[in-house]
Image (cartoon, rainbow, N blue to C red; front, side, top):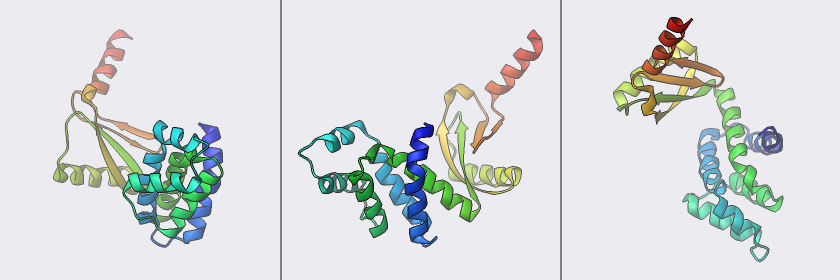
Length: 177
């Protein structure tokens, strides 16, 4: 994992410097879309085929992502493919998102919930979490039925677990101690 981050960081920083903060959020979304495609083993097999040209790989990735790529994102994709680093693209996207978030004061948050949250519940939850963590959050919800109820929130390296599962485990530890 550390090796991927080491390889990906210069690509993410170069793209961030090249755009100068202009439209960084939209470019991050494009980069995440092509990174999702580039992370597939089938795409790796296609790219590793010696009869396939790098331009064909770039067309495939952009086409499957369904994106008309901004010139700088297309240039990054071509550079990554030319350097044989297609497998690193998901990590490049993650590092780029961290740079964009750091500049805008926003953090990514993953909210694990036992049940789906509607838009109102999510907005209320995010507002409460923003006050708790002291910064703006870009929340993504994932369903985890093992929580039984409540939520578990991961923001960077911070975790807030208010799930029933966590409370039951705390009670179990207290009773067996």
